[in-house]
Length: 526
Image (cartoon, rainbow, N blue to C red; front, side, top):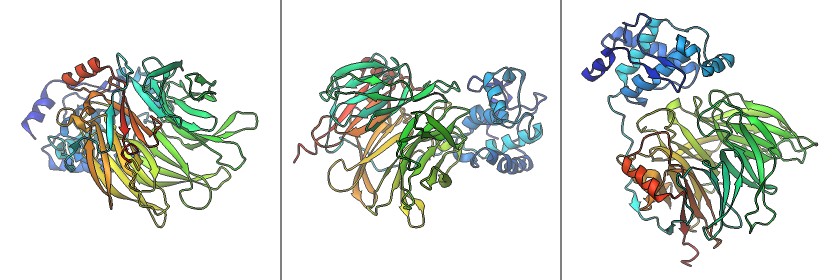
């Protein structure tokens, strides 16, 4: 056992705060027993137990997924109560009562105290002292080819932008979590108006009736049923007279996305709602009724769905639903439709829980007419945790036989969103990506990267010099200035859940800039 870890284990009782639930530690019931990392038999037994019990909630996580300190401080204590261990303080928690009510944790431990110590010994013995490094990407050039950085004349004392949407007529909508409001930004970059929505907005989608909006309910993790789905409308696109229609759905778990299409062929647009939740959540499609109400059909009774895309993914002529699910599931699912409202689930990919998926969208990168998936994974905010080597931007291309293959990976700490457009007009798709959890100590400019497509899944990365002047939570691509090409609009949320260097925090406080525009110069060059 490394000397440092032995010292940590032997200093009194190390108590771990579990997301406000209560405190547990790694000791046995007698408060003297500790995981025995020096006993090969105990470590081997622990490995067998891990492969038996850890997979009941998620895919098996290898010990080298994170460093030893993170296993000890963060993951193993959480694992312990998920296996049924408890304490008097823990039982007082409303969260524990909710987990028990929904059968998320067992009423009694599923393994003995000694088995728990062996399982802990396995992970502590085989995990690295320091996080395994990411594969080094190609050097990131400073200066995004074809774009000009524009600091818009919009200010916020504490930028807290949770969603942005570039409008078809130019300009954008910006969700301001500090005000619980939506702000209209004119095509010239000036503030045009504010609409109070009394909710934390998580997504905007444009449809003929208006902007379909998902109200998260609470930006911070919560199981309160305060989320909603509503429309934003504006009869005059050139004015700031936006209105919020009363919610079509309310009383939902934290909702990260709302989508719409006619899924059963009755001519009425239905809804697909991603109730990410926290400990409890679900994915459902809501069937539009003749009287204007909606009837719920649950597709996935699990928390963590981030967003969906609706398309004919298997070529049978019927609409299907692609869903990216995070939390303990960390999977991409297809719900294959038959055109009448019935769906069959298929797994595209699935990974262990430390992957932290964050976003996906659909695009055809290789021009074969089949939908590919551009995916980011980099969520690192559940608890204090170092960067992870698996984080980054991935492209999964559609293959014959209804499978998707990973054909491109760009390592990016804390990757949070990526969009694909032909930004430079050369006939292929480029990628723009943001990170909400970059490695601020070693690579602060890794908060944004532009990947210019050079062909054959080869991309040249670059960033802009001012990329560290915000903590980019959201981004959208569209013709912001009305000149005929796609610009990039980034939204900053500086009160993130993980620490940042003081010099950056001070700069954000001084800069007070909620938005950054990367103005595409493609049209002006022609």
